[in-house]
Image (cartoon, rainbow, N blue to C red; front, top):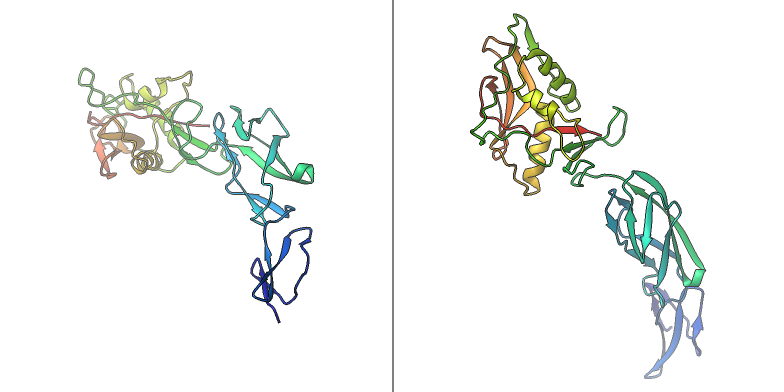
Length: 293
């Protein structure tokens, strides 16, 4: 019996004339008295899948790549279109996302219109994208259950400790308070922490108030990151070879009796990633605000 292989499958038949099926073109090839069938190319597309996820950050673009099934298709040309042009537009085979977040459908057409498939397409930020205020997106919570999904780091420091013309402590001008104060260290607490600190301290030159007063690219909703948020930010910059300008950075997480020199706030080294508690009268920390959106 003559064995012929087509895409890894074995067939024990011989053909005297070429055969075109709805998926293969098979021809007869007589060599030394044996009939061997071989696949030249496929003529009809069975399926198409994108090579990567169809998620594009707002304002960015993507040229998608597709895998055809079977792989040896005769004509691999295709056209794509977008159902909702308010989400994204098409230029050639390049998808250009608009500035807003949204979902739509990508329409794929090939085989002169005989093959058509629809894929989900969304515009969404991802960690590493440039956020609305021009800084890096450093965290994605996955949903908006907390009223926000992303954390964006400011594109520059609000204060750098190397600027020796102005010395700023975390908050040594705090009102004297006998009670012990503690702010949260968790992700999602930086905004509330910063507001609490600003209310405790009676000076404009403290880390919390500087973060609250900060404005860049039209955005003024910044605050000091919590201890865990600060770690996320500094780890992101280190992992992406994006060195921060300062040597160490203040967080909004602290504990102690304000105004007695007994309060300490968490500080993180931007090179070693080490976190440590420092007295709030220290002026060794820089300030890189973050925002939720």
